[in-house]
Length: 428
Image (cartoon, rainbow, N blue to C red; front, side, top):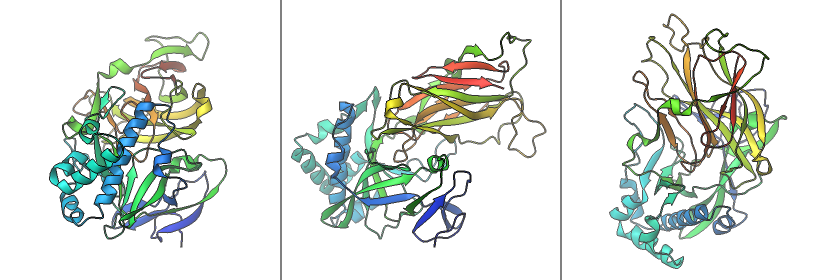
């Protein structure tokens, strides 16, 4: 059966989603609710075919490396040594960091597995040779747009993975597959070892579904086959699993317009009480190989002044903006997205005596479900480090970085252009 709401369900269901509701379909395991939003399909084309025709030749080269590694891992999983060597790898690098973050994302470096088991090294070397490449040169060549990576493998469905089932090895890149609610990646399955089965796996973006003008029906499942995705990862030395942005004042906007003619500015003006993201663009830059880019915003706030913030939430929040068609990558798109309140911010601490003014930190970016968080952090404020958890394939795949302060005049528009495109924010 398929039940809308928080309840036990079977592993697959078909459902009608009404955009006016916020319900979901979950699998309940103890105190953990798990979204069952995966779609598994036979691959219409080979994985190699999907990895052709890129606009960015460097991305195509890196994705080809990921494909070779994925194919080698899948073949290796059919050997006797896999169950001992692979299982001994510690998938816990990001399970807890210095800020007290907890995540279900398990990960390991491919180089660690090479060092551990020469059986895997031999298989991987043979795959690179078959492609006319040198393994060592390729593994040292993971740079893109000024950022350095190492190939890693991460477990995408930690809470539902059943290791008794055939493994799914995914290539950490999206493909151009015509589906309105999910983004798909190429996947190799060990279900018929030593022969490999090619699939595509997508994950439904519930924010996208809820934004559709009409209800739709779709099939999805709680994926129990372990989904191990080979991706552009960070090495263990990357401190805090984040890219530091430094002083947030570097990302504060400039005054762009005043909605009310003759509106007074300066210390005597009426202060706004909320931030709204009213317009944004991709700046002509897309980071998606499908026809549409998943334009999303991540935001985080911290209270100003002397109020106690030790209890303040650690996590930032992802929100849906739009799916932008590739032909509209130069256009400015209108929104009325409420980023946060300023003076009327409602505290989450029930013991707080007042509602503090807040600083807000935000970024617009290209959302990729198959990638791990590429976190961005600003300089700490009163012991808290503002962290934006951006799930994206590459570190450069964001648009505007924004810092907002609660001292703007009402109905004033500020513009943001770092790193690319244009974002407009108005105060009310």
